[in-house]
Each structure stands twice: as structure tokens, then as C-alpha cells.
Length: 416
Image (cartoon, rainbow, N blue to C red; front, top):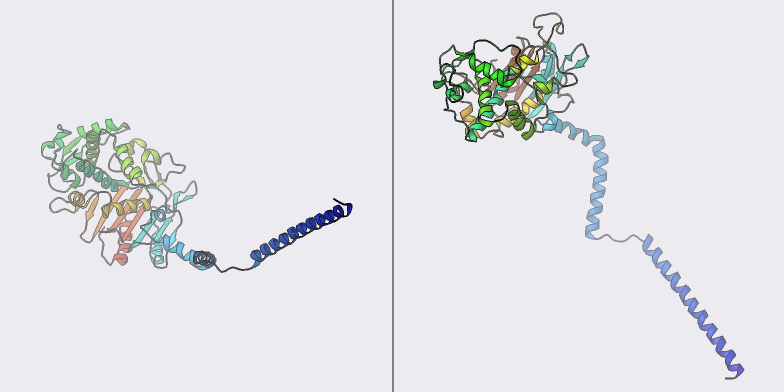
């Protein structure tokens, strides 16, 4: 190859390299422009992305709006739903516009305790009044715990009916099956004990005993006939003995049975048997000062032995919300089926009492007392309209207050 030819080939090769580099530069520029185009040019959304963007926009608008108007309204609405258990155990006081008149009646009466007023399933009032412990400056709130006294008999009756459902017991079983040495035991049935129509009473209360078995043995050896079998006569010994029967047929303690079913299985969070109650940071103090000028002038101490003796009948502490929840579950067939409820609530001939309730026709009445604690309840048959007062300063006048509260609520002249 000539020298001229070699120089020509070199120049051509150089030009080819330059063209190749220029092409690469142009390609890079074009790719960059395309990238910029797609980066900044708005594209038409697909149906899915369009729907999603609408949800985001709506959510943002709703969030902004609800934070100003809708959210507080929704929260207020939720707080009034008595079927929402969280509302019943909330420490937030509730007094609606309609509930204000009930609040004023309670305030004017000098009531001390906690109150819950429900109308058509909506909470009108849920509030504490006065002090749970005046010396410690602890006020009553919607979640303060009170001894519910004889209202506990209803829970004991439910446990009896569950034992019957499980085939461990029958309403026609006689007391003699469990306590044959009690006078008249061969003729006294479980049904009559639920009705307080056994004719039994306790001749002498146990003193200083805290062991449950010793207490039950005492009750059984000091139960005597004092009334006519088949006729209602209020006597707590019936439910002391029913608690004993439960331990015999189940092999478990009464406390374990109540805790397992009501607290663990049915989730009552503000219900405590007396031992657990006494371990609270500030156990509610009760005051036996009815008729005295200073409502907090006479704090009353209930000994643990005294409370232990109330097995099955009056050593359970609850908030007004938990008590309402219990009755709501009971009256709406969540604890027992309808057939069992009908059997349990069958009163003795001519009576109205059975299993912790007085059946007043269009409503139920329940009451309990222990020391200075008093518990009052008036309930429509479906529990949609109810008044519960739990007090740590029980007064006779609170029975009239209950009537004043329930009458305008249900348009019924209640008799407490």
C-alpha cells in the first residue's frame, strides 16, 4: 500500500470514530429529553389510579373537616351508645342536654356515689357525685367501685342455672342432697332457695371467720326453719347455701366460678370480689351517716371477715357501667338462654322475687346494701331504659330519688 493510501485510510478511520462519538452524544441528548418529557408532562390516570386519587382527596377533605366538626360529633355520638362497653367503663363524665334535668335532681338530693341513666339504649348521664374517700380527697367518678350488696345474688343464681344446664344439678333437687342435717332439707328445693321460699334463716352470724369452708360449715349448722316453706321471706342464708352447693357440684371455689364466668369469659373489667377490691390503691370508703349533718363524718370499716361471710350474697364490688353491662347481658339472653331465664325468674306463689330481681310487671327492680353502701336499679325488661345508683353513703331517701328519676324516663310510676 502506498504512503498516500495509508494516510487516506487513517483519515477515514478517524472520521468514522468522530461520527460514532457524535451519534452517541446525540443518542444521550435524545434520551435525556425523553426522560425530561415524561418527568414533567402530566399523564392521564387509569381508572384505578383515578379512583385511588379520589379516595385520597376525599380522605384528606374528610379528615380536615372532621377534625373541625364531624369528629367531635361522632365521638359524642359514640359516648352515648350504652351497647358499647368501652363507653360504660370510661372515666369520662357524660351529661347530655336531656340528662341535665336528671343531673340536677341528683345534685339537689345530696346523693353521694355514681349514677348511670340510659334511655332507649343511649346514655343520658354517667357521672360521679361527692367523695369516694373524703380524707384522701378522692372523688367519686363514673368508674368508682361500690359494694353491690344483694344484687350479687343474681350472679349466684346465674351460676346455679349454668350448673343445671351442665347436668350437675336440678331445680327439683332438694337441699338434703348436699346438707341433709339442715332442718326441713328433704322438702326444700333449689328452686325455692332461688325464690327465698325455703323458710330458712341463719340463727347466728359467723364471727371472725375468713376461711370459706369454715363459713359454709357454720351457715349449714346454724340454718333453722323460721317461715313457711313455699312462701317468700327474704333471708340471705338461701344464697350462702347455694354458693356452698356450687362448690360441691363443681369442685371449684365460688370465687373461682364467679371470676371465670363473669370476669374472664364475659369480660367484666370493673368487677372485683372483696379481696381484690381491698388491694386497690384507694378502696372506696363507705359512710353510715344517713340523717347526719356531715355526710363524711362517720367512715365505716367493713372487716374482711364480715365480707368473707357474705359469700354468694354481698362481697362483690362493681362500677355502675359494669353493673349495667351485667344486666344487659343477662336480660338479652347472653348469659343464659331464654328457657333458663324463665325458670330462674319464676317467683314463689304470690311473690315477685326470684334470683336477685323483683318482677314489677313492666320493669325489674333490684336493691342491695352493705354497711354504708347502697345499690339501686330499675330496669325495663330489655334493659334499654334503666337507672342505676351506687352509693357509698346509703340513705332511705335514695329510694324516692330512684322513683323521681325512673318515672320521667320510662313514663312508669316505679315502686322501690
